[in-house]
Length: 430
Image (cartoon, rainbow, N blue to C red; front, side):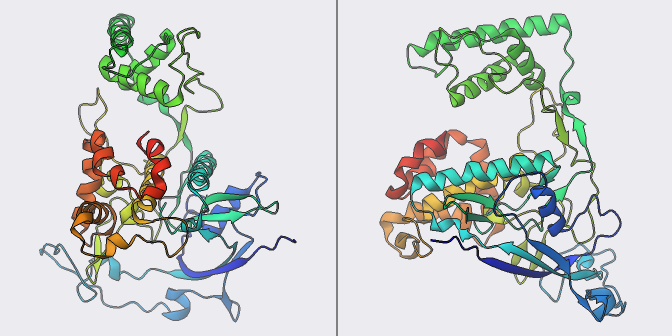
């Protein structure tokens, strides 16, 4: 059978960002950057262009409004209401914003809901994380990972893969910065003292594992790993937990006969620029780009969020702050939307599928969610709190509480997964 690729034409009005096209590329230009130098099939986009009418770019301000500007709306000395409607908008929303009519020809994917089996579903998430890694290497983050933007694509050889699409909320940094500047500079005596405490903590964990008290390490740990963890995490007890969690997650801490864990085992060695990071903190946003500093907008009681689709947004992004203050910091670091927040969004997509679906297919929503049976009150409650509530504060608090008490995630969330997704429970908990 001959492979046949279907395409879709995405047509929309994009903000015109002329001040710094390198820092604020269009969605089509972002796809071109993502595809550059990579042997990918199908490409993110086949072609893109701005629509012209009689030789003039079809834009809202110049072609449609003909530069006509209305009297601006102001509320001098009056606080803005908590909720607004179309007749009472946030003032900045009335400022005329020039948008351009744009076409992007893209390969058509299938909804992530059309996976064939749990193993296939699970495989699509590493695909998306690898895509995020490629974008991150090119100074790009997506910022809107959601169930509608995670699609399944087919290669010419019949195999399938997952991919994030719709980069219209993505942002690009100008350059990378050296993240080693965030490492605390410990003196030799401080490092020696903290290293001894950390070694004791790890040895205690190994000793107590026989009593099934704490899951820990059987394997010794190289001093370079200890020093790196202390410089990043600072407090020895939490540094021990971090090393233990990483080793347990990777399975590298089980064999006592192996040589001590080293930096390269954990991916902490300085190679291929891993100690450089896109500088999103100092990036200035472009016209029409919603940011973490933008006011929340309500239009007909619906919340217009700044960076993503609310049900799948990271707790940090919803709260607009860093929820966990790293040890050694005297105050909460300023919040910046980073790649890890998009990874968390992918996690919430997977959790949503396991809670709300009863199998593969577009029409496989669980009937229990739409009836009043008292036996499924717990399921309906958790789905409402995490994903379907019309109250943004409910969604916000549900995500934040899962940050504060992650040990309760299995009891409060995973236990309500549909039986079809039973094999995925250990992976979600891990």
